[in-house]
Image 1: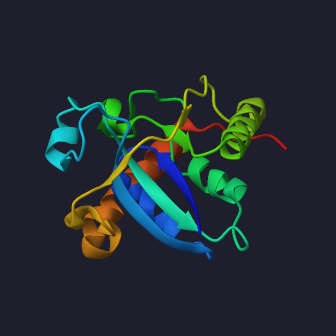
Image 2: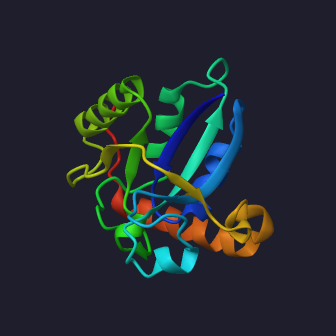
Image 3: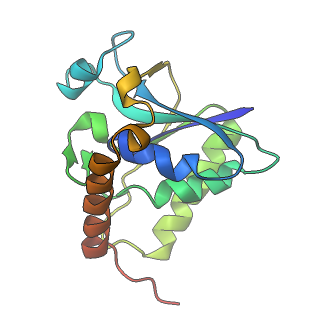
Length: 173
């Protein structure tokens, strides 16, 4: 089983798009990149730990490639917003592709360059690509949020969709 780590705003909305793909074994919401071990949701939300909300994706590379995961990732984030995502603001919501090895790093960089060259966005792509560090699973109430709180998840998803409709340029063919 391979793993990939992505941050792109509130982890609640990041889980479902990955989880629905064939070849995904598990998606875990959590925190990474901070300076204290085992942070809580409340600590991270206060923006004082340096952590970013992220999802750890376990996948079967024989079914789904890392490049496929990158494609899913870019569809879930605003890669032009360095200090938040959609209605979630602050460093803990910044867009980051974390890599576990040089292959993931190279694929992430190539994917980012391809997105930049597409002119899909009218602003600079600011998503960072960083080495993965310790990952701390979030508390149980934050795991599979879309299943436990479908109404709240639907509102979050709709707000993201509305944002995307007003901020993403149409790509000319």
